[in-house]
Length: 155
Image (tube, rainbow, N blue to C red; front, side):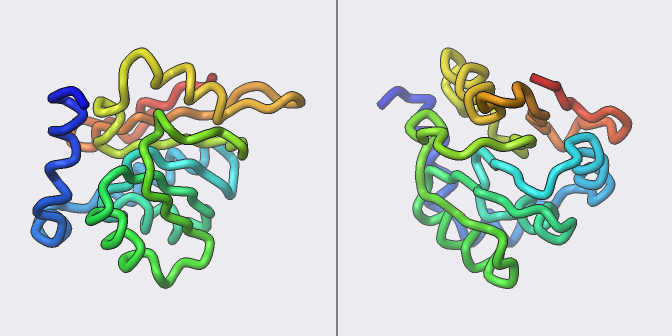
């Protein structure tokens, strides 16, 4: 495992503290992303403790959330327990097999942790099926994100 891949899992060592002190995201950003994607299903990469996951679930989106840290995934499950449309899988995006397809893939503050050589190829595979290519990729850096237009890319 490379240093970067090891470093991204260190948040799990302080998962409860992380969940308590990390601010959530602006609901307006989620509303903008959901309106662009026009979908009720999404794939989340790097769910952390579920801060963004909860907001998307509140907006009526069913979410398959991938989180590589077992400690972070456990807290995400707890935080998302009230939302039956949310499923948390403890795994890395790089190891996830895209058996399901989505119109929206989002990643709040975690996209930079995905292996650069894999991130867009895997995103495209998750967003496409044989009938309708494409979807919306939203790699949010919430601290610098503009609500109008977000960072969404149609693939």
